[in-house]
Image 1 (cartoon, rainbow, N blue to C red):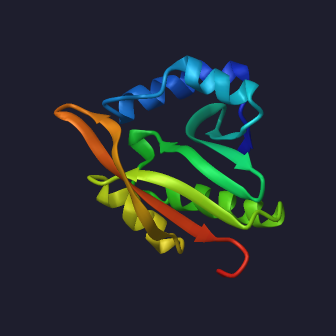
Image 2 (cartoon, one colour):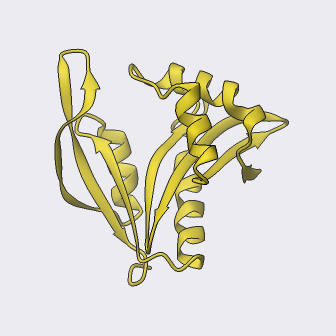
Amino acid sequence: MLRPMNDADLADIAGIDRCCYAFPWTLGNFSDSLLAGHRCCVYEENGRIFAYSVMMAVVDEVHLLNMTVAPERQGLGYGAALLRRLVACSRQSHFASMWLEVRESNAAAQALYRSAGFVRAGVRKNYYPASNGREDALLMVLDLQHAA
């Protein structure tokens, strides 16, 4: 079940983020996103959260800030299903485009985004922290008005 994120979810979500990333968001990052009114949602089953997303609306665009699936559910289609829902909801809300950054080293996420119609729009140099300094991010965009 996909539902809006709430404060009671934050510890579980931050825990999943720590399991998935060398440089995770903090509980405060998620709390700030809720307080800012970002579009935050969770996928849960039997009361257990296994995926979430955070999107920020800016005029006629939406920016996907974080989308994560718990390690035990990765590779099973949940990321693709969540992304399809986010795209559909963004279209229904009449956003013109959806933007995101993805680590240059994250080939699996890039493939997922390309399969949904995202295209490369540029590079953000030294965007992400990395164990050896900084890593570039690929900037990707999906045209929500014309793409099917």
